Amino acid sequence: MPNTVIVGAQWGDEGKGKVIDIYAKKADIVVRYQGGNNAGHTVVIGKDSFVLHLIPSGILHRGKVCVIGNGVVVDPKALLEEIATLESKGIKIGKRLLVSRDAHVIFPYHRKLDELREAKKKKIGTTKKGIGPCYADKVARLGIRFVDLLNEKVFKDKLNENLEEKNPVFSRIYNVKGYSFDELYEEYSGYAGRIKKYICDTTVFLNESISKRKSVLFEGAQGTLLDVDHGTYPFVTSSNSTSGGASTGTGVGPNKIDKVIGVVKAYTTRVGEGPFPTEFSDDLMERIRTKGKEFGATTGRPRRCGWFDSIVVKHSVMVNGIDEIVVTKLDVLDDLDRLKICTAYKYDGCVYKDFPSDIEVLSNCEPVYEELPGWNRDTTGITSYSRLPKSAKNYLKRIQKLLSVKIALISVGSERKQTFSNE
Ligand code: GDP
Ligand code: IMO
Ligand code: MG
Image 1 (cartoon, rainbow, N blue to C red):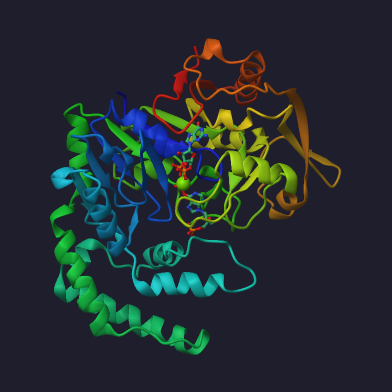
Image 2: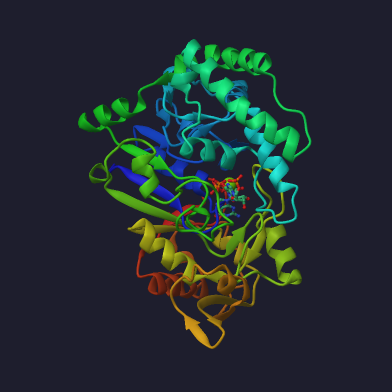
């Protein structure tokens, strides 16, 4: 299989876990390149449902090597818990998990800062996992990587430096207690001891593997519209969830990546705050949320739902260089009489056919819709494109035309077998 990046083309939760699980079968290595345990990737195998937060979804396939790349921010406590949960479900991890020595480590002060900022009126609606504060430290060159954690002297110095700066912020700005050096040092030295066996130079591992013609699947987390550069800033996550992040977040050059696949939900969802031009009104919101089981896999929060937005996905196709898409959750639209697709935004006398980054425009624009007939038929048992109702085919054809990109696979349920190609 060519080295492939799989990215979310909307606001996350597109069904990447399911799609990665399908493609992982043909790959040798699966690597996460950004984000952290803010992600929740669901893979359903028969009666078992797994939600992966940090460990690549390929771990469920025996024999696949899974890598947490340098671009990921890792909460060691969450990682150890995830390993334990998987092992308790009979998944053997052994030497199949590698963690980059250069990945930055999330500390309790990151989680606390995230939580305190979210308590303010102007919140982002984060997962409160400490992702943003950890990436902020990375960019401010204050961050602590696994390689630092494993070096007693360096770890002590860096932890001291961090607490000297952070504790006064907690006490003076937020009026809460700061953190004790000794407690954090002990807790994190303990994690380091337990995680050490997974830590290595994953950049060398990945590049050597590619030289030996092994194939790598890059597992994107979040979605394009949550990308810190290309998303609905500031209502985004703090990493590059787009395909470019696959290179910086692993140390694999872009010329070694052969293909980019975008995962696209047949409608749109988002969790947390921020603009969402095609958001449903209350009645439809409830119907689709219930049918699509649209509740966060990480936080359990109800997801906001809306019509398919071709402006958003066209933007994703461009900024990721998407070669083909996988359309998921088509079945969730089964009961609707009519469907809408957004093809433009109108704001203040202007018509936008390209994604506007002005938050004012995004928050107040009026979507321009095209209407299509629904199919009013259960599609969950369908196993080939030819058996789809005509209106469902037309809906997919219209999406394909608007995006000028090929649909590779269609998904009509959470199970592996509820997937077929567009032929
Ligand atoms: P991810 O973060 O992109 O991996 O997506 P999540 O796992 O957060 O959310 C997607 C949800 O939709 C999961 O519960 C999946 O099991 C489920 N799912 C995936 N594909 C389909 C589909 O085609 N139809 C339905 N009904 N559910 C799906
Ligand atoms: P997966 O990989 C959906 C959203 C949060 C919030 C914003 C910032 O499962 O698709 P953060 O905690 O990252 O600082 O929160 O990003 N968010 C996600 N939304 N799916 C995700 O991941 C998300 N990860 C973060 O809800 O709006
Ligand atoms: Mg998710």
